[in-house]
Image (cartoon, rainbow, N blue to C red):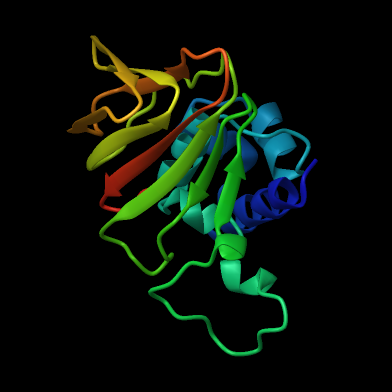
Length: 190
């Protein structure tokens, strides 16, 4: 269990209770088992990308809301941080159960656009998920397969793909090494 997984679980539980939902009701809204949701809330399990999307949508928040405020971890800083700047050490990071890691590069206050730096260990892949908006992905290193609806795209270093996010989409690393990519999402849904 990582500190971010534990904090994320606490935030999910807190919001669920604030909205007056039981675990069973949240399970019905998300299609996830109440046992799995309980493990996420207790910080025992790291959710997949699709699971977090489902949880955030069911609770009416963006995914970034489920994670700690980057200002909480700012060392030696008593004053508010610039809402236009995200320092490397202050990035919100999500580590998924499959090994994929996302880092939010844009401030939480920006609701119009998100830029996410993603790293994919060898042989990792996401399950299909969807959300409102549009997005584009630029592969920085390696090779990434992106499936949108029924269409499959193989992206190599420097390739960029854009699509409507409400179509189910998934991605997987085709490289023997790590693949990295930048995701641009509008409106913010991370």
